[in-house]
Image 1 (tube, protein in one colour):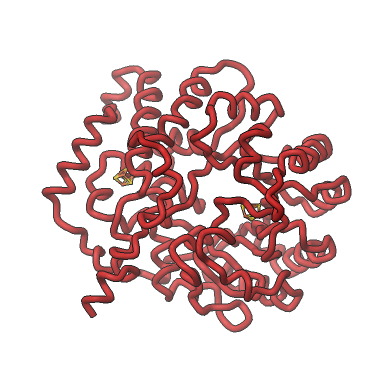
Image 2: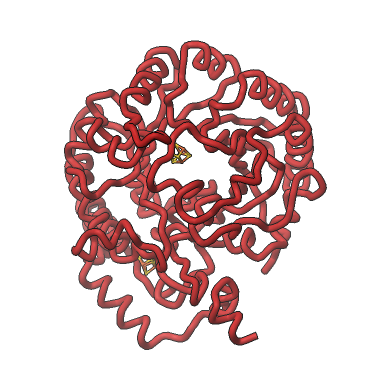
Length: 425
Ligand code: SF4
Ligand code: SF4
């Protein structure tokens, strides 16, 4: 692997390691990783100073003139406003004029007040809020530590942010296939959202607990397609839906090299900084096991690039390129990119697997492709060698290809993380 080309353009900054919610599906607290218990509750100013120095060095090494910090948790609003002022001031002082820092924040919204909105505006921090649909849908899994629903408190914070912030908050919604997708979509439109990202629940081949609750092979695709079929043909104002728009842009030939961990063929240029300064690959990998993301690098003594010398961070960066045999022959490989890395994991064969959502991804992507290509004149499709692939055709192609093609040269590398490889040592 050519490590010098690997770089990070976005850092997920765990400014707080605890949360005021206890969502059933949370990969931080409820999917088998307990390392948060050993983390300081908040990032210290010493870690912040070192972190920004490390980013300055990294940007210089890789000739980057822009860098994004995403404040995350736990719940990032449990940290003090003073800590945000210190962070942003430090970043602007150290990075400008060579590097333009951008700031985003992902919150559960429960603690948003007028004072927080003033701070977001003052520090130019873009805000995303997690909300899983209407009260009934949201309060199924987004619960507090006493098992009570969070919808009312989230909506209170959301309404304040919606009213006061010049850039309206985006919404992140966990896909709850037990709900009616059209109810969810109508609800999100009724609260005037401009942007939503639908998220597949995090699970691995050993723990696909959400998918196994339903007896159809493609429950997530079926749920999303119901929304897509309305959204795509809808005239007038409608929200931007990241999942669909990313697929459409990839179908039209856009290469995403901006750190998209879900789709496409680009490098995933994101790392996580824990509250103690630990540098880690993307945090959804915590579903693979207790301590799985601990790669023993820390901004207090290491460079950001040092993380890419650890196999897990390197694989995470190249996750849309180092695919298993089935993905390599898949007709939608360049759009799907094997999906999220965590969803390919099994204790036995590491990451040498397709996604647990393989059939869902294949069905959703082919459906979107068919709809988009139907809007393009046949002569243009022909000139650009674009031919629609239908779901059942695609399914046969991957099943046939998996049987008769060779393992890619990096299969052993993907298996390094599984027990099969350890048995062969
Ligand atoms: S709000 Fe986010 S960090 Fe907190 S428990 Fe829910 S999913 Fe986890
Ligand atoms: S649809 Fe399935 S086989 Fe195709 S790239 Fe995605 S995970 Fe791999």
